[in-house]
Picture 1 (cartoon, rainbow, N blue to C red):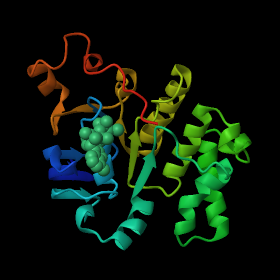
Picture 2: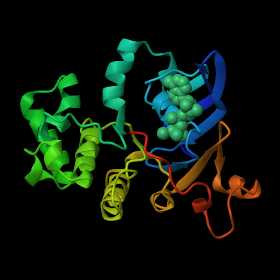
Picture 3: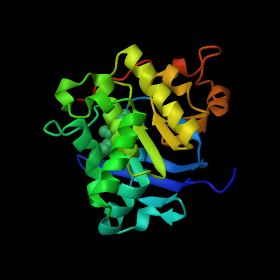
Length: 252
Ligand SMILES: Nc1ncnc2c1ncn2[C@@H]1O[C@H](COP(=O)(O)OP(=O)(O)O)[C@@H](O)[C@H]1O
Ligand SMILES: [Mg+2]
C-alpha cells in the first residue's frame, strides 16, 4: 500500500458508565490508502460510531494515535481541530442532520462559511456539488420538502463541498427505502471512482458493503478482515457478511 491517508495506531477507547469502565476499542489498528473505498461492518454497539468519531476528531482515544494525511489528529487542540475538520472530513449521517430552516443550497453552503472564500467562489462550489448529486432543481427546497433520498444527497453534497481528505459515512442508507439506498450507494461509488475520494462506509447492509473494495469487521474492540472472520468461524459459508447481523434498531 502507498503511504496510507488514514492510520489508526494502537487505538484504545473506553467509556465510564455508572462507575464502570467499558473498553469499546482495544489496540485497534487500521490503514486506509488514498482513494480506497472501505466498508466497516459490525454488530450494534461494537464501536463503529465511536471509531468514526475518533477519526473525525470529535472524540479522543485513551491510548494510541489517529493520523490523517500526515497529521496527528489525536493531539490537536480543539481550535486546531475545528478548522482541520472542516477541510479534512466530510461526515455523512444516517439521519442526514440537515438544518430544517435552511434550504438545500444553504445547508450545503454552511461548511464553506468557515473557510476564507469569496462569495463568488463559495457559490460556484455549492452549485458544483449540487449538480454532482443531481439536486440543482431542488436547491431552494427545505429538507422537509425533500424525500429521504434527496435529503441524503444534500448530506453528501455538504460532506464533499470542502473537498475533504476523507469521507466518512455512518450507516448512510440505514433510514432509506431500497431504491433510494441504491441511488446513494451509486453516488458514493461515483465519488470514489470519478473523483478518487477516500471513503469509509459504516453499514449493516451487506448490499451496501458489497460496494466497498475491502471490508473490515469490528468485533470485540478489534478490526478483522473478512478472511480472518471466516477463519474464526464468524462468517457463514456462502452467506458472506450477511451472517453478521441483519439489522440494527433505529437509534433516533
Ligand atoms: N459517550 C459515550 N458514553 C458512554 N458510552 C458510550 C458513549 N458512546 C458510545 N458508548 C458505548 O460504546 C459502545 C459502542 O457504541 P457505538 O460506537 O455507538 O456502537 P455502534 O456504532 O457500533 O453501534 C456502546 O456500548 C455504547 O453504549
Ligand atoms: Mg453507530
